[in-house]
Length: 481
Image (cartoon, rainbow, N blue to C red):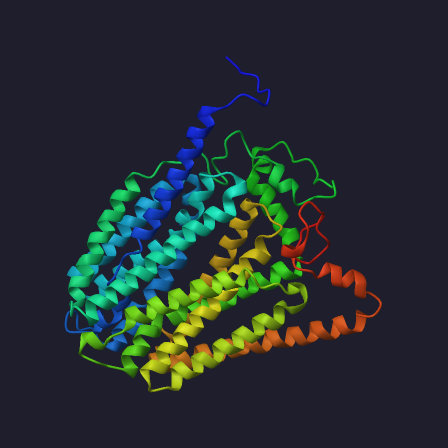
């Protein structure tokens, strides 16, 4: 029996549904927070090099750690596709099982092969993060995407911060051995698996499980002037949402701002994660202590996470003409990161190295939300997922190639200090390219500034400053047919 809505009838079922999705979002954020409580994670490298496992620095640097890059690249695409096809929850269960396998191998494994398997499972957990970050889109309506995504991201950052502080307090104040921290981490991972089992299985996802077939509404945003693409062929493949998105990628690659920030994502994130993988080895070489109480990895991770969260939040309030200043901002930040890497490579003071690491992570996290905004501001959520997936894949391929050349024992097999000199040269080269592009753009803008000043100034205003409801201008960050 249907009820006609005359504008005055109340709908109790909608209120119940509203409360339900709020509970699901809260539960997902609680799950994201709890699964980050791994107090032993900040001390894995000193644990492997210490008396508990007694591996050598060469074994950890050139035989164990490189497996992480290889496994991440191998499983990234399959997990990305399975996440959507299986509707998130099975992949989150796989992630929890992989976390349990990591800590079991850390506790009971004694050989290099066991530690290589540990790094393999670590690669699976990293690739499976896409399931958590995209799960929330199946719970809420598009109008809630931005706020709910920030909640889920904040829950993860708070979990990392709490985990790092807890680990550091246990080691420095309580004198807890690294082995005991690993048992505590294993307990939290088992609890995380239990939480995963109670997550609700979504009925829809972005690509393969769209209820009622693919909706054209969001892809129609790509053609605001009414110029719709040609009618799709009758084949099932060409009618699919995935085919339509792949067809739109050809248009996206022609947009300067999207291309610039995608290239930043690929090249800079590859160097960033390589630094993260090997920085604990660098700390151990600079300050090789046998007193666990004087290992401050957890406190440094906590400080860098907190600074990263602050800079990421502050980035949301930066309003400049990104179409004009993007290259200069990226070049300046990258040059700053190159200087920090040089400091980390040359200093013998562990506190200077810690400080440079904290600032490096904070500067990277400052640009991440800007890149997300510049890429996603004019795309549908399906295209955003596809573009971010492609960017992450190419970054992983680049990271793996660099690892094979400079870190793997079958390549150059460099020790950790020479590796950081390579990372310094890599970021210096990126900074030169970005700053050179900024100079070229400034020269071109100078030449056409006088005849096109009014239109150009309006075109370059930040999308955040545009009045809602108005049609976007032809800014390089917007998509038009």
